[in-house]
Amino acid sequence: MMISTRGRYTLRILLDIAEYQKEGYVPLKDSAERQEISKKYLEQIINLPDVSKMLDSSRGLHGGYRLSRPPEEYTVGDILRAAEGSIRPVSCLEEDHIPCGRSADCPFLPIWKGLDDVICNYLDSITLQDILDRKSECPGGNDYVI
Amino acid sequence: MMISTRGRYTLRILLDIAEYQKEGYVPLKDSAERQEISKKYLEQIINLPDVSKMLDSSRGLHGGYRLSRPPEEYTVGDILRAAEGSIRPVSCLEEDHIPCGRSADCPFLPIWKGLDDVICNYLDSITLQDILDRKSECPGGNDYVI
DNA sequence: AAAATACATATTAAACCGATAGGATTGGTG
DNA sequence: CACCAATCCTATCGGTTTAATATGTATTTT
Image (cartoon, rainbow over all chains, first blue to last red; front, side):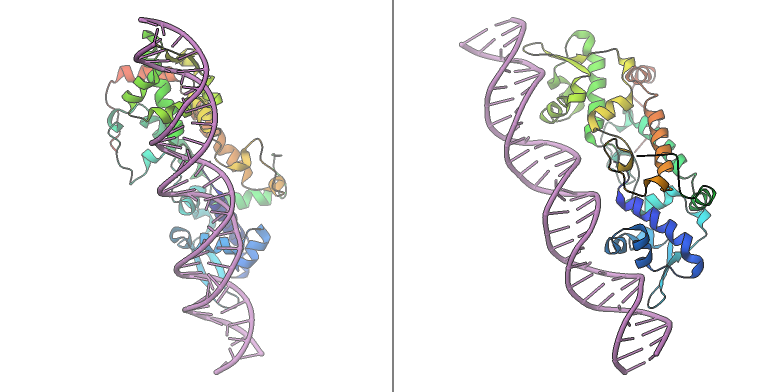
């Protein structure tokens, strides 16, 4: 599996913050309770360097988090990359990957590159604002039963 | 990462078998040496139920493996699913996944479904024969330097 | 009989996942 | 100033997966 709870929790928390931040900083405790996710685990996730850059925080009473930019500037791809480190489908495509000696004529490398492209194009085409809009359009209920 | 060495090795070995099977059964030893992959590890992979279904085998001297169907009937998606078990991007989409209680109005579920679709559409559009054709068109060399 | 091959099962070191635990630090409020 | 609520920091842990290695057994051709 490509996207673990880390990425999915991060998406849910950022969306939760986006929904509630008009009332001020959103305490992680509240988001965690609404989303039914371990607050302690969320603390770790939210303090990952690339995730914390997406948020402003305030300590003390009435502290919490808010998005540092408007929701339309957060793509799903950006959030997942921040939380997961990388969402490349194979290690061959990682920045720091050591070439394997066959890469120059590897018949699969173009395929992996193509796969990465369709994934990024899709995930980077959806923003937090898109999800907020869709939620208010059809509140409670989507097409899927799992 | 979505696709581990298991999936990538399986693709390489099936392509190797496709290339060499016109001379009869292809011993795993030969494929392993050409591909520089541990033969013992390959034995495990190739005996996974869904992978072994894709091959005919023969024991003894001059035994080995060959594809049980023509190369154009093997999509990259099929091979990866056989080797990896699943290539769904999130566990929420697995067949045996226990619904989480929020699935009825989860705002992310449609996104995961869309992601799974673009991945499957892409990977199921490429067959082993496509890769063989591309190899013979531009032997030794693709566009990527990693 | 010997050799080559597939087939089977167990073990292992390392990494990763999804938490839990116990605090330290900071800032607002009475 | 004392208290409390919140973020921030670091360690630990059980379970699973990954990528092998090891040790065989079974089968077939020569």
